[in-house]
Image 1: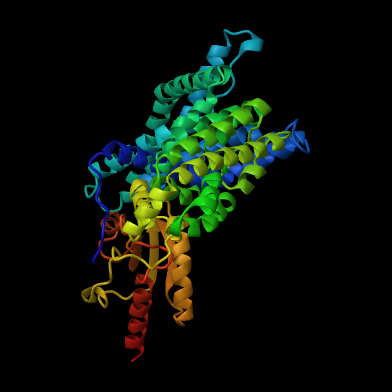
Image 2: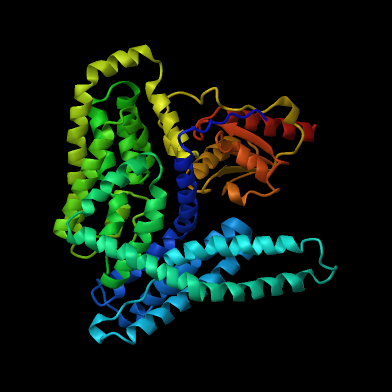
Length: 519
């Protein structure tokens, strides 16, 4: 296959490492967001201060967050690394960490007065620590005796080895991991409490807003803010931490500024991007606009700080994470009596970002017009820079491009076109959700219009690829990883997940195979 890849920057090794770490954390959290939403709904309706208190149903809230959610996260993380087997042992180990934390808290509370006792610590960070430890160690152990088991004893060895190692991991979770996580949570909670007491929480925007533009936010959001926010929400019913990163105000403010005061392709595409960002919750669409003019990151920081300050002063908070960061998702998770504060924080954050962006854009308008005349595609270059910074594909970013896919698309070599019958086409990306799902939908419609009926088009995470995929379509930065997972598949590399000319080549390939088969 002919593929194109984006070279790694020599100054970005640390950034890429953080991105990969954040992607792994995101891979554990994002598939379980529906469970967090369900927990938020239970909390909103049935707890004592909920909309419709029902004491019997309220008993679900505690076990839901204390046991179910951490174990789901652990299973997901273990499954990413080592399939179902990794997920099972990760769940066992995490349950040990949950029990160990409860035991530790009980021991501490035994020596404290009733009005000063500690509450439960929910093992979200514990699950994120235990999942890779358990899955990688189980895989390592299985490799030790692979091919050395006598025929007929494979199932016996596999079952007992996982059970015995799960037993060991549960003990490891009970003692060192539970103690470690309780200490981490105590330090982080104290840090947040200090920031709140000193009225310094808005300063977190200085880190969060630039991190979002360079795709470093997952490690911060899923590694720190979400676990701490859930801990606070379980204790008080809501948390402001859920709004530090998810507030759509700064992004839409920047895009509106480009809508009215931008130039060229950026101005033409900004209104559509604003709709996608604000209502669809895909924040990444505004990152290329900031990268075009890095000074605009100051506008995003100011808007973020304004939103956080508003929520601090007026008590704005969410019951659970808002994912994706759509205004609809934010409203759905707003805590009781916080609607005015949260909505005002979005409006004010957007307004501040809009005003500062307007000043920056107006001040550099003449220079930007001269630069636009000297280059054919400055905005396209910014989108490419964003994709490189993110390190993975995105249909939302691809949709910003006004033209067809670039020449970086890798075509299907004639030598590969008839080597394997194409029955199962898989779109693959890091998470296997948003961008790959949208690309799969585009190709599925093309194949349907071509009258081809016995070809399936699905989407998966690269980590979930297997030999059943006859043809794998990935964004050009990810093709090498996909080929390592399924070397026997036909691989197609595209630059644009939404309108790549490679899709027509795939349709032609499949149609040609069908015509040859029917001849």
